[in-house]
Length: 479
Ligand code: NAD
Image 1 (cartoon, helix red, strand yellow):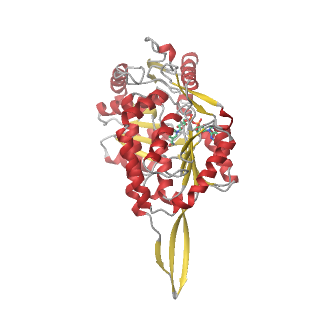
Image 2 (cartoon, helix red, strand yellow; image 1 turned 90 degrees about the vertical axis):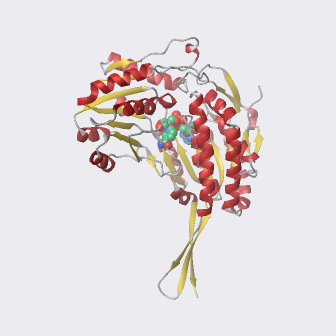
């Protein structure tokens, strides 16, 4: 097997020493590729490449940069099927979800292509005999470290605002899902992105990731991953006085009021929780339903969940693929064992590894609903990254909001109601960076995305994001 190469200087590069690690299919356990185990030296090489390329790239017009994005988006759309299959193979998600993630990546490039013409400074009249101007300058070398759950979309969110603003870039993918990232980077080069502007270094977080954050030439780090890792990244970035954006874990609550459209709330809960096998930062991780409708809601939800088919994401009939890795599967199994041993709730449906031909080869788990969850349960306190949904009944909106806000996380939250007063109260009082009304999960590069509390700080996307990748230079002019 030929190892897939890192992208340094826009060319395929061998790892120093030639050491590799395996990327395996989480549905079958099969070896997909071997990828270089990037070292500190590889990171330095990538940063050197980004440094050499910086001046040339910064002096191109934002519109020229945008046109490269536009061409790349076209190529990504042309190769959508091949990319979606690759993403499903390494990540596990059903093919339909992989296709929409690849579309999402192309859309992100197109959005920032449009934003290119909005890059500008200001002219500011000041008191006295003079003028002031502000000029926007790219920061230099930016870097991102990303997780395995949405590798294509998150790559787009990180690289696009940085590159369109004239920065050069080093990306470190998650070790379970580097293949789609490497292929997308090579498509950007094919679309005309000059060598050295986007470099991809594969390798472990503790070595390749940390040396990227430590390197004094990197001016900004955008990190997406677990809150614990985010704190480590923040510490390292602080000692180098680097800008940092942290998109971390979440435990999003979904509030289902007594006047909600039950059919759409049930469909929303199923998609919100079981999309990507429950491995989305903004997945519905806690469900609070008004007690007056709880019985009917749970009955309908159970019926819907029982219809979901677990299987290999490449199989057309699959609704839920495997978890991405053994660690995630063991974590979910451990939570279920604890529920059973400690009387920690009632499993309504699911709760075990499904039985079908080959299910023992992958990291499969049944979609699981749990009711009667005690308030101190780990299901409500931790970020449950998998197909397991705790359901809690509440008397009214006040109690729902109080319970929802109890989490250490504050990424997203959703309110399901037809009552505008409840919408207003929820939008004002829920402590989250994103609030959905009668929907959950939808994200778009046109609007800011990010959380509060342990879900991190800084925002991605939306027109204001460019200021995160630019320095403002003030020029005072006396006539
Ligand atoms: P993780 O924190 O284990 O790993 C994320 C990345 O950090 C990987 O590339 C990993 O190699 C790297 N890394 C690990 N240790 C490091 C270190 N010491 N220094 C530098 N880099 C290091 O997270 P994960 O398990 O890959 O992803 C799941 C997590 O990501 C969940 O908590 C999920 O909620 C979160 N997430 C958040 C968002 C968001 O936008 N808020 C989006 C997607 C996922």
